[in-house]
Image (cartoon, rainbow, N blue to C red; front, side):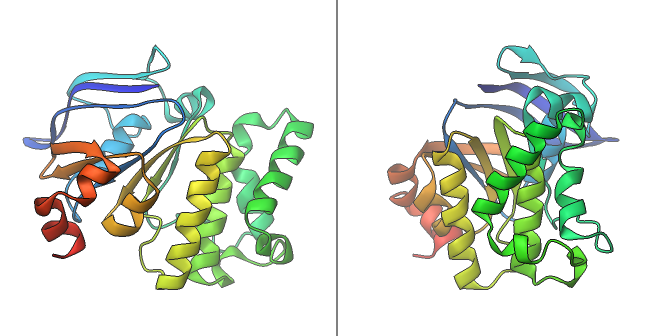
Length: 235
Protein backbone atom coordinates (compact mmCIF):
# COMPACT_ATOMS: atom_id res chain seq x y z
CA UNK A 1 0.00 0.00 0.00
CA UNK A 2 2.68 2.50 1.13
CA UNK A 3 6.24 2.09 -0.10
CA UNK A 4 9.20 4.28 0.77
CA UNK A 5 12.45 3.73 -1.08
CA UNK A 6 15.79 5.30 -0.09
CA UNK A 7 14.16 8.44 1.28
CA UNK A 8 16.38 11.35 2.35
CA UNK A 9 15.18 14.62 3.93
CA UNK A 10 17.50 17.55 4.56
CA UNK A 11 17.14 20.81 6.46
CA UNK A 12 19.90 22.84 4.85
CA UNK A 13 23.10 20.89 5.38
CA UNK A 14 21.56 18.70 8.10
CA UNK A 15 20.28 15.31 6.93
CA UNK A 16 17.19 14.62 9.04
CA UNK A 17 16.30 11.33 7.32
CA UNK A 18 18.77 9.03 5.65
CA UNK A 19 18.00 6.16 3.27
CA UNK A 20 14.57 5.26 4.69
CA UNK A 21 12.98 2.23 3.02
CA UNK A 22 9.83 0.70 4.49
CA UNK A 23 6.41 -0.68 3.57
CA UNK A 24 2.93 -0.66 5.07
CA UNK A 25 0.56 -3.25 3.61
CA UNK A 26 -3.20 -2.86 3.25
CA UNK A 27 -4.99 -3.59 6.53
CA UNK A 28 -1.87 -3.49 8.70
CA UNK A 29 -1.28 -1.58 11.91
CA UNK A 30 2.42 -0.71 11.82
CA UNK A 31 4.24 1.06 14.65
CA UNK A 32 7.21 3.38 14.18
CA UNK A 33 9.16 3.40 17.44
CA UNK A 34 11.72 5.99 18.36
CA UNK A 35 12.70 8.54 20.97
CA UNK A 36 11.88 12.22 20.63
CA UNK A 37 13.98 13.64 17.78
CA UNK A 38 14.43 10.28 16.02
CA UNK A 39 12.80 11.62 12.85
CA UNK A 40 9.30 10.17 13.09
CA UNK A 41 7.46 13.48 12.57
CA UNK A 42 9.80 14.45 9.74
CA UNK A 43 9.00 11.15 8.02
CA UNK A 44 5.26 11.73 8.42
CA UNK A 45 5.58 15.27 7.07
CA UNK A 46 7.49 14.01 4.04
CA UNK A 47 4.79 11.43 3.29
CA UNK A 48 2.10 14.11 3.79
CA UNK A 49 3.72 16.49 1.31
CA UNK A 50 4.60 19.10 3.95
CA UNK A 51 8.33 18.55 3.38
CA UNK A 52 9.99 17.86 0.05
CA UNK A 53 12.41 14.90 0.15
CA UNK A 54 15.95 15.45 -1.08
CA UNK A 55 16.03 11.96 -2.58
CA UNK A 56 14.05 8.75 -2.76
CA UNK A 57 10.52 7.75 -3.68
CA UNK A 58 7.15 7.69 -1.88
CA UNK A 59 4.41 5.55 -3.42
CA UNK A 60 0.88 4.95 -2.23
CA UNK A 61 -1.21 2.37 -4.05
CA UNK A 62 1.24 2.69 -6.98
CA UNK A 63 0.78 6.47 -7.12
CA UNK A 64 3.89 8.61 -6.67
CA UNK A 65 3.33 11.13 -3.85
CA UNK A 66 6.61 12.98 -4.44
CA UNK A 67 5.89 16.59 -5.26
CA UNK A 68 2.15 16.34 -4.55
CA UNK A 69 0.57 19.15 -2.52
CA UNK A 70 -0.67 18.19 0.96
CA UNK A 71 -4.34 18.53 0.01
CA UNK A 72 -3.78 16.20 -2.96
CA UNK A 73 -2.10 13.67 -0.66
CA UNK A 74 -5.15 13.79 1.64
CA UNK A 75 -7.48 13.41 -1.35
CA UNK A 76 -5.51 10.33 -2.41
CA UNK A 77 -6.29 8.68 0.95
CA UNK A 78 -3.23 9.43 3.12
CA UNK A 79 -4.14 11.46 6.22
CA UNK A 80 -1.94 12.55 9.12
CA UNK A 81 -3.09 13.25 12.67
CA UNK A 82 -0.28 15.51 13.81
CA UNK A 83 1.60 15.46 17.09
CA UNK A 84 0.15 17.97 19.56
CA UNK A 85 -3.37 17.66 18.08
CA UNK A 86 -3.24 21.04 16.24
CA UNK A 87 -6.90 21.81 16.91
CA UNK A 88 -8.61 25.17 16.40
CA UNK A 89 -9.24 25.88 20.11
CA UNK A 90 -11.85 28.62 19.72
CA UNK A 91 -13.89 26.67 17.20
CA UNK A 92 -16.46 24.13 18.35
CA UNK A 93 -15.84 20.40 18.40
CA UNK A 94 -18.25 20.00 15.49
CA UNK A 95 -16.49 22.70 13.46
CA UNK A 96 -13.11 21.06 14.09
CA UNK A 97 -14.45 17.70 12.95
CA UNK A 98 -15.97 19.18 9.79
CA UNK A 99 -12.64 20.82 8.90
CA UNK A 100 -11.41 17.29 8.28
CA UNK A 101 -14.15 16.82 5.69
CA UNK A 102 -13.07 19.84 3.63
CA UNK A 103 -11.61 17.79 0.78
CA UNK A 104 -15.00 16.05 0.48
CA UNK A 105 -17.08 19.20 1.06
CA UNK A 106 -19.31 18.58 -1.97
CA UNK A 107 -20.39 15.17 -0.65
CA UNK A 108 -22.75 16.27 2.11
CA UNK A 109 -24.45 12.90 2.49
CA UNK A 110 -21.11 11.13 2.68
CA UNK A 111 -19.84 13.60 5.28
CA UNK A 112 -22.97 13.16 7.40
CA UNK A 113 -22.50 9.38 7.29
CA UNK A 114 -18.82 9.65 8.22
CA UNK A 115 -19.62 12.06 11.07
CA UNK A 116 -22.02 9.52 12.53
CA UNK A 117 -19.29 6.86 12.29
CA UNK A 118 -16.81 9.15 14.11
CA UNK A 119 -19.35 9.85 16.86
CA UNK A 120 -19.86 6.10 17.26
CA UNK A 121 -16.12 5.79 17.88
CA UNK A 122 -16.10 8.75 20.28
CA UNK A 123 -19.64 9.05 21.75
CA UNK A 124 -18.65 11.79 24.21
CA UNK A 125 -17.94 14.17 21.31
CA UNK A 126 -21.65 14.26 20.48
CA UNK A 127 -22.33 15.74 23.93
CA UNK A 128 -19.41 18.17 23.50
CA UNK A 129 -20.22 19.11 19.88
CA UNK A 130 -21.03 22.77 20.59
CA UNK A 131 -18.19 23.41 23.04
CA UNK A 132 -14.90 25.09 22.07
CA UNK A 133 -12.35 22.36 21.36
CA UNK A 134 -9.83 24.12 23.58
CA UNK A 135 -12.09 23.69 26.63
CA UNK A 136 -11.91 19.87 26.47
CA UNK A 137 -9.59 17.60 28.45
CA UNK A 138 -6.42 16.37 26.81
CA UNK A 139 -7.92 12.96 26.07
CA UNK A 140 -11.05 14.47 24.57
CA UNK A 141 -8.97 16.83 22.42
CA UNK A 142 -7.06 13.82 21.10
CA UNK A 143 -10.39 12.21 20.22
CA UNK A 144 -11.30 15.34 18.24
CA UNK A 145 -7.94 15.26 16.46
CA UNK A 146 -8.33 11.61 15.45
CA UNK A 147 -11.98 12.17 14.57
CA UNK A 148 -11.06 15.12 12.35
CA UNK A 149 -8.51 12.95 10.54
CA UNK A 150 -11.13 10.22 10.10
CA UNK A 151 -13.48 12.77 8.52
CA UNK A 152 -10.97 12.97 5.63
CA UNK A 153 -11.81 9.29 4.92
CA UNK A 154 -8.25 7.93 5.10
CA UNK A 155 -7.28 4.59 3.66
CA UNK A 156 -3.94 5.11 5.46
CA UNK A 157 -4.14 6.97 8.78
CA UNK A 158 -0.84 8.24 10.21
CA UNK A 159 -1.01 8.96 13.94
CA UNK A 160 1.90 10.94 15.40
CA UNK A 161 2.33 10.37 19.17
CA UNK A 162 -1.39 10.15 20.04
CA UNK A 163 -0.66 9.10 23.64
CA UNK A 164 1.59 12.09 24.40
CA UNK A 165 0.64 13.80 27.67
CA UNK A 166 -2.34 11.56 28.41
CA UNK A 167 -3.13 9.71 31.64
CA UNK A 168 -2.48 5.92 31.59
CA UNK A 169 -6.19 5.00 31.61
CA UNK A 170 -6.88 7.39 28.73
CA UNK A 171 -3.89 5.96 26.83
CA UNK A 172 -5.34 2.44 27.20
CA UNK A 173 -8.70 3.61 25.83
CA UNK A 174 -7.01 5.50 23.00
CA UNK A 175 -5.05 2.47 21.83
CA UNK A 176 -8.18 0.31 21.99
CA UNK A 177 -9.91 2.82 19.70
CA UNK A 178 -6.94 2.88 17.30
CA UNK A 179 -7.10 -0.92 17.14
CA UNK A 180 -10.84 -0.66 16.45
CA UNK A 181 -10.24 1.84 13.62
CA UNK A 182 -7.79 -0.61 12.10
CA UNK A 183 -10.15 -3.57 12.50
CA UNK A 184 -12.87 -1.60 10.68
CA UNK A 185 -10.66 -1.40 7.61
CA UNK A 186 -8.34 1.61 7.91
CA UNK A 187 -4.62 0.91 7.56
CA UNK A 188 -2.67 2.61 10.37
CA UNK A 189 0.91 3.85 10.69
CA UNK A 190 1.46 4.81 14.33
CA UNK A 191 4.49 6.79 15.55
CA UNK A 192 4.95 6.23 19.27
CA UNK A 193 7.36 6.46 22.19
CA UNK A 194 5.01 4.35 24.33
CA UNK A 195 6.40 1.14 22.87
CA UNK A 196 4.72 -1.43 25.10
CA UNK A 197 1.18 -0.11 24.54
CA UNK A 198 1.80 0.36 20.83
CA UNK A 199 3.32 -3.07 20.26
CA UNK A 200 0.40 -4.77 21.98
CA UNK A 201 -1.90 -3.65 19.14
CA UNK A 202 0.59 -3.69 16.25
CA UNK A 203 1.15 -6.24 13.51
CA UNK A 204 4.70 -5.06 12.78
CA UNK A 205 7.11 -2.38 13.96
CA UNK A 206 10.11 -0.39 12.79
CA UNK A 207 12.66 1.19 15.13
CA UNK A 208 14.00 4.60 14.17
CA UNK A 209 17.01 6.45 15.59
CA UNK A 210 18.84 9.56 14.39
CA UNK A 211 16.94 9.64 11.11
CA UNK A 212 17.63 6.01 10.21
CA UNK A 213 15.69 2.76 10.48
CA UNK A 214 17.62 0.37 12.72
CA UNK A 215 15.42 -2.73 12.70
CA UNK A 216 12.00 -4.13 11.89
CA UNK A 217 9.98 -7.14 12.91
CA UNK A 218 6.58 -8.44 13.87
CA UNK A 219 5.03 -7.77 17.28
CA UNK A 220 6.35 -10.91 18.96
CA UNK A 221 9.88 -10.41 17.66
CA UNK A 222 9.97 -6.80 18.86
CA UNK A 223 8.50 -7.56 22.28
CA UNK A 224 11.08 -10.34 22.68
CA UNK A 225 14.03 -8.30 21.40
CA UNK A 226 16.29 -7.46 24.34
CA UNK A 227 17.65 -4.29 22.69
CA UNK A 228 14.14 -2.98 22.03
CA UNK A 229 12.99 -3.87 25.55
CA UNK A 230 15.90 -2.05 27.19
CA UNK A 231 15.56 1.03 25.01
CA UNK A 232 11.80 1.44 24.90
CA UNK A 233 10.00 -0.90 27.29
CA UNK A 234 12.24 -1.55 30.27
CA UNK A 235 14.14 -4.70 31.05
